[in-house]
Length: 347
Ligand code: NAD
Ligand code: ZN
Ligand code: ZN
Image 1 (cartoon, rainbow, N blue to C red):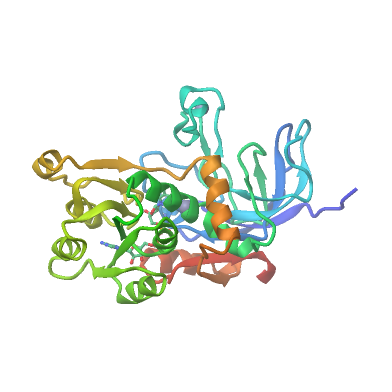
Image 2: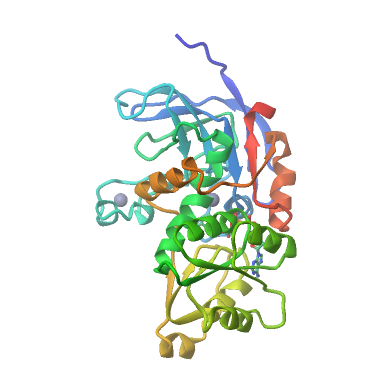
């Protein structure tokens, strides 16, 4: 029998917008069909900032533990669990669970299942030493990929891998990626692996210098006088695919403007609010505007495989759980270079 502690450290949102509290809480016990994961690493996503502020129409209910890039070994399984076993290394992603039998689940659109639960949002997440998970929806982490390096892949990676595919841009064509943070720096790498020309857009010259190092063929500062025109000029008429990861409404109208005729503008970023759409341009140029929400379990396997093969690598900064409030504040103000990962070996 494994002797386990009864209490764990967790960073808890007790009230929207108030600093997270570092608490000692009970380690959950896996019930039938559930598993318990011992967190080794958990990435910090800008979505955690939105969760902490209660930014979206669908809100989590405080108190809750954010974090949806948690990785670690399974340490206990509940009754009836057969598809994972103790010792397997898994990730507990945003898509925490879905119903498995609605029209969306049956057609590999489980991400939009009406009964979906979200990790670190409607279910407690990875800013804690242990996470309860649904074995049917965890990510399976390839051997050889460190937990700290796998963490950003299970949200930022899968989301942009899917997002790039959803633009429909083909090898040899242009993709414009707006927002080169946690999501965007991985989007550049997936797009390059897929044979696309990449135009990177951000408001920070440091992020753009980094984008160049990652293989971006063209970089544009969105604060420049006319970034839409700069992209149109540099790509010979606009990008065939545009992927907006920026958590800023201003980037959305610009992104639509950067889209080539008959191209697709995919929206990943989720700042609260609405953005104006230039209706005549969208209609007359046959532009598609498409939302994209994380990815399916199959997308997860594929996104992780690129990382395990060394073709995509998250740039990470390790921090202890005790630094979570400073990390969230830095993320909110654009001061995180790529992705901060909470390293539980540091606590
Ligand atoms: P991040 O803070 O790491 O990166 C955001 C980047 O956008 C930064 O580099 C910032 O400088 C840049 N930026 C800010 N304003 C900009 C502008 N006007 N134009 C261009 N770039 C600009 O954030 P992240 O973790 O990459 O998350 C980004 C957004 O994506 C958040 O809103 C998050 O909630 C959302 N998200 C969506 C999904 C999904 O499934 N659709 C999944 C994960 C995250
Ligand atoms: Zn995320
Ligand atoms: Zn369903």
